[in-house]
Image 1 (cartoon, one colour):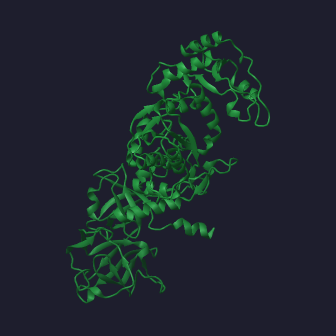
Image 2 (cartoon, rainbow, N blue to C red):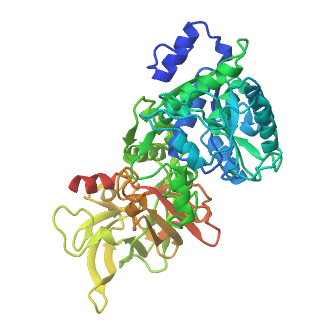
Image 3 (tube, rainbow, N blue to C red):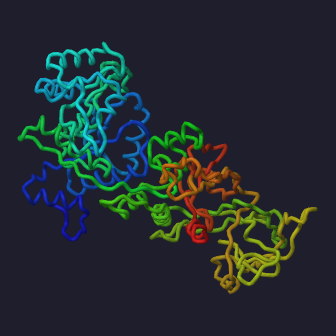
Length: 561
């Protein structure tokens, strides 16, 4: 059992109560059951962390089961992406299962339902069935086909399976109660005809089970003890239990469905249908576009598995749906990358700095600390020369007393190098500064121990030697939506809130140590933010994605609004 010192969430309290009441701990079994009709998103990440986390805490198996009951929308690409995402997050399933593994068993059970007069073939159109189902305040009416004979139902159902009928002509419905206050109990569909190729069973089947029928029975077949799902499935629990009642064997584990609240993330959407729309309509480049809320997109942007797991742990499990500010996720990313990402120098908005009294043709390789958070500090060499790039924002020709970077007549330290003093500027015919000239204090080299090196100056700026700089494409990503809840108003198309400035592509200049950086390598560009090597990168052309800034700039913008 779990340590009593730990504060338990309500799901863990349910499990602890079951164990206290005699449920055998070795019978605990969990599952993560995605539908392979899209890539997993940040909401799925919470569910993955919940189910696999319970497996770790209780030393119980967790299955990865694909609910692949709709071949019209499912693809092997999605299966592969889901497996990749779960493993990348740091989890490994006990068994890989598919609802399609159980198609024959589900069909055989459905035949038994018909024989027991618990199911019937309905030949109404979908529009007629919808009308006949009634409303939440008005009882439904029985289908004209509800009292078909067992023999006729068996014959029709078998012919449906054999592919004798077009799509939409017949369905199999459970015979429950058309007057139920729960609309889902009003003779729900169990099977529909689909002449579609299935990614695993090929063309073996012409009928496919509905999610509600397949899901609970798959849990039952696998011996899942606790079937955890999001709150929108709460009304489905009655149906989940009704289906189990018809087949349950007291010698087997009976799954228990329990619901937790979906955690929506601000400034994004987590509907697979809407994410697919963004991809298909070209608002993003692919499912793994770094602006997407998909796990693949977050991975490509430079988020770490640890940061996503920490985010899921921080927001916890609740009974009420709420909107989590994306800044909390970004905080978790910063916190992890701060410990692990090497600090390097890169200039993204360059202006040339010439140190006039530095010897022509001379270069030095200076020691630079990789990450001050390391237990044992490590260093690399960075080249220094007469001509450097610095950030344009780090210089002002005239500045007030609160500007602590380079101005004419004042001193700043060049990171890992020397103290310099602004002397003069060169301008083009339009009055734009094209070059800054400065002098350096030859005795002020960082780490040299000289009196000059220990002199205090108000600012330190980063730089890159122009002669040694590595040119790279840098993709500056921002939030994909300007509104915190883009699909919160059903009267407004969520795409109206797409941020037109969610991607800016610029050329950056990097220190040469980054020349050999590989896809998914992560760095802190000092004073600029965290960046990750993109998969588009090559030896000939480096491509970096901005993961997140060093601080939450959106907080200031939204505070002003």
